[in-house]
Image: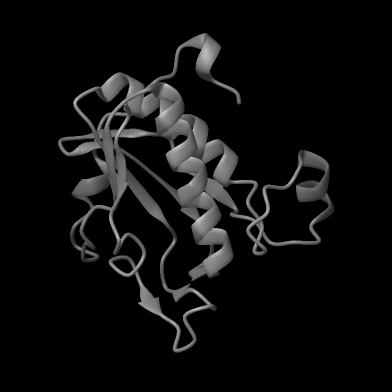
Length: 152
């Protein structure tokens, strides 16, 4: 049986929660870290998840390409490649410093789905916040997907 655990503070560790918990967080553009003994499968899962998360709207719904192109609902502007850190594969999305709760919860659901589909045990978390002087976190090697893994 696959064991996928999500850090209960995955978003609180990245930004400041709004006073109304239903509103989400201010400040974070979500960064996901997959800790697993199976790095290749974890990277594949994160790669697939981060592409899907790019299409999650503020409502928490995964939009089609056409819906995203219409621009009626905000989605992330950009997603990073998967970086191979010492702690595990890591990737992020740019949500312009706003992370509505519905969007965040959908992103975590997608990440859990993709990790579970790989059949691996994993802990889903975020790297520690860094200071402006600490740009080292982005100096990790970039994971390159196999040809069959590039799209979703």
